[in-house]
Amino acid sequence: MAIEGDNRGKSDAGRIRLGMVGGGNDAFIGGVHRIASRIDDRYELVAGALSSTPERCRESGKAIGLSEDRIYDDFKSMAIREAKLKKGIEVVSIVTPNHVHFQAAKEFLKRGIHVICDKPLTSTLSDAKKLHKAAEESDALFILTHNYTGYPMVRQAREMIAGGELGKLRVVQVEYAQDWLTEEQTFKQAAWRTDPERSGVGGCTGDIGTHAFNLACFVSGLAVESLAADIQSFVKGRAVDDNAHVMMRFEGGAKGMLWASQVAPGNENALRIRVYGEKGGLEWAQEDPNYLWFAPLEQPKRLITRNGAGAGEAAARMSRIPPGHPEGYLEGFANIYSEAAKAIMAKRNGQTVSDDVMYPTVTDGLRGVQFIDACVRSSSKNAAWVKLPSD
Image 1 (tube, rainbow, N blue to C red):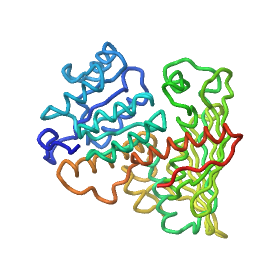
Image 2: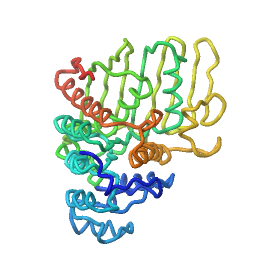
Image 3: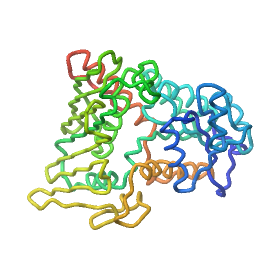
Image 4: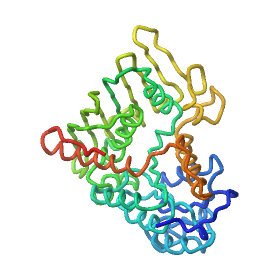
């Protein structure tokens, strides 16, 4: 469905009108999205269906200052009314548990409202395929918040690899280790992530494994052709996996290893990637994000800093403040929102979206759910190699 110019507006003036589904009281990621949307002053949150019950929707909407007539009991009524308003929302952020993503995104896409959706794309592969089709058929944009692709030094690494500084790639190693589910947990954020009805069949693989998978593909520029996965649930009674070891075969012959775990004591948010080619290697760690190690073959190892010597245009484009002032999680998240804003403003004004605007898409989301599905299938066959669908 085409974006209705009379309702959405064509003026370049003013912030982008943003709505939110999910992200109410006590929801960690909703607050992160709201902060990220405001860092570069491109959005104004004007409407929301923020929780799973009408009472909690009202409480949450009032708590963040929404007008009472723009607080909705559910996402469907929100999509219907906002699409009719002259100053209705132009884009919606969907920050619910995974099982809500498909139905919510579909309601807004079919009314020409852009979607910014948390990962993974959906809780099932069937829904992911349907949502991918719906997004492809809509004139609205679809942005997936794999926020780690917004870090300056991640963009630096991707630029260096694309420029041939590592030569032909041989090995890609990525890991994402946490410890917060080492024991059984019952609080809100843990409860839905360990419930297959809400998270999907992948627990750790869906929650953080998809981030690691996406990062490996984004930085290397390569697609995974097949994988062999050994996944397990170490905590007694847990219905989804909490640890995964995955071997990967990339197009062009590169080999990969992925470890994702939420039962690794001593690890808070230890996302790390190492890439090695014929001419050198790169290493980046999320907990120390302003630095990228570059090891040219038979030369001293070099430290490249954000906006420092050796950093290129890709890193500079994602940076806001001078060297030596740390940027991290919120700024990386904000970069995805700012890239989305550039595309939304172009669409608002009837312009072509610039080729240098880069954010994770619905296709990246589909690949992530295909990764989860492949891991589960492989592990059920004693870590047999399984193929991932090609484009």
